[in-house]
Each structure stands twice: as structure tokens, then as C-alpha cells.
Length: 221
Image (cartoon, rainbow, N blue to C red):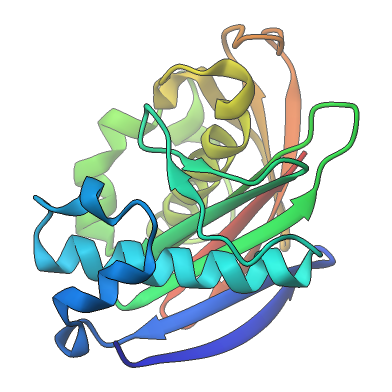
């Protein structure tokens, strides 16, 4: 599969960005992954994006001092990182991103998300399933166009959920984290329910940046 690798820096964390051409994917490319039998029934586009994400993850692991081993697939379809490391993968369209860091004695995790910028029409359609409490009013009170602010918040929730999942170990909805503040380079979310070891009211500030025709957000816990 044809790919092109670049790196970005967000909140002093190196992100590995892999652009890939799905139409250049061949079934034998997947044999590079030790867990390739688990993807046997996936459609070609899913196989291509999964492979691209794992390739980006290997670059990120090497950069962090880890083994060049593609992360496996957990019981909840989450990446399984090598012992001593944690990371996150995101893919949308023809782009895959990954970031990795070593872990310590305390809980440590990353969550990364790339969200193509939504149109105002799409943002309005998705809003009822993503915005809760006074979140719509908070977004509309900012100087940022609604579709842009919504895209930022949607991505931030995805990143935070990825970062918290290793400790929570169960899926939870968009209603569990709500926006507190939106700034030029960050977005702060507050838990509206307790999640595993994290109490209701816990706050997390995520970094964000524009990238191409979309948004990248990063939760670095």
C-alpha cells in the first residue's frame, strides 16, 4: 500500500501522520500484522485504514523507545500496546494518526482524534446525539461558528474517551463529558458522571489544532 509519512507536534507530543492510498492496498499487505486473521471478514476499506493506523503506531512506538510491534486488537476493539507504553490511533478518510508515550507507575494514557470539519448542516444533524445540558448554548455563546466549535467538541470527546477507556474498560456516551471552556488551542471537558476511578466533576484540558480540512485533538493524561 502506498503511504506518505509526516510528523506534527501538538502540546509537545509528536504525532505520526500517515497518508495512504486505499486503492493501492493489496490483501497480502495485511500479512504484516500478526493479528491479520482477526480482519479476515472486514471490507477492503476497513483493512486499509486499520493497516495504515498500525503502521503509524509502529513509527510512534519506535520514536518513544518501544518495540516495532504493531498493537493488537483488544476485546473492545481497542489497540493493545506493548508493556510499558500507551498510545492512541485515529483514522479518517485517507489519513491515519498515532501517538505513543512510555508509561510510569501512575495511570498514563493518550487519546487522539482527527475529525474532518463538519458542515453546519451535518453539525446540526449530529448535535442532539452529542450535545447535552447547556452545551449547545455554550457553543453558540463563543465567537466561533457553530459547525467549527461543534467539530472541535466532537473530536475532543472522542479523544478523551479513548484516553479514559484503559482505566474505565467499558463504553460510555457523549453525555458523560461536557464542555467547560473553548480556547484558541485548548478545550476543557468536565465529567458529568463518574467513570471508573474518575469522579463526576473531574476536568480534563485537551489540546487541539487545525489540520488540513479538519481538527486534531489530543488528550494527554
